[in-house]
Amino acid sequence: MVKYTAQIKIAACKEYFDGNLSRREICQKYGISFTDSSSSSILTEWILRYQELGENAFVKTKGNRSYHCEEKVRIVEEYLAGRGSLQLIAAKYGIPSKETLRRWVLEYNANRELKDYNPTREVYMAEARRKTTIEERKEIVEYCLSHDRDYKGTASLYDVSYSQVYSWVRKYDATGEDGLSDKRGRHKNDDEVDELERLRRENKRLKRQLEENDMLVQLLKKVKEFEGM
Image (cartoon, rainbow, N blue to C red; front, side):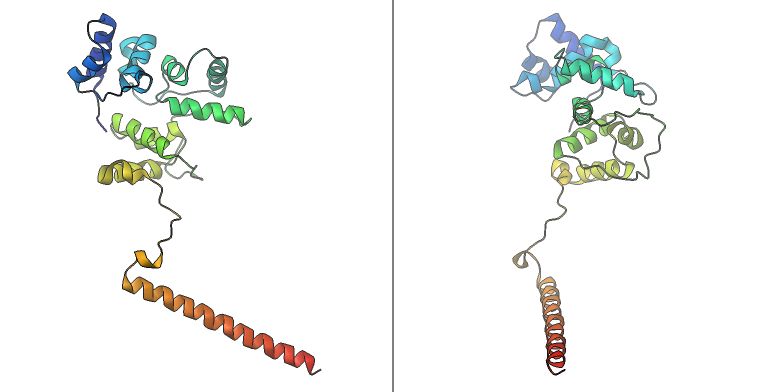
């Protein structure tokens, strides 16, 4: 995942609006990742943000912006009214990710309260860890890395815990996007483990069988005692 400076983003957007180079040529000139689909291009997102906010779209401000519940509702209703795509409206209101806006829409449609976002809220010990998709985790890691590894700010913005963000970034640093896959719950079969683990499993199985046999013996004794009464 490449980190692009504000200067590169601004220069690339200016090149686009000057009209002298194609999107592909701009990406090649500035070393920007390019996809054939213009709607999913990272350059497209920059252009939309620049169009709405100018150079301020890429100038980092101290702290994180607050979003009040009324503002969230207004933004979501603007999207639902068909006044722009997720990407366009996110850019218009300075929301760092269209996935953040997508989550607001899902919560709104589920009749869940869109709570205020307070950047001073403590996130180091979140009470519950919400489930995330692989795409969300990629988005969160990308945001965190592009904001100087601001784990706390990222956790607050995306409504996840500090430890989750920290863990995902460390895994990404170690193994790339593969490290963001959720491998919990997968149980290796006997052919995928070493000899010691197979022996441990076999021991557990035998122990369970002995316990079950003992329970059966005790049950039969009870039955005989009952029949002999």
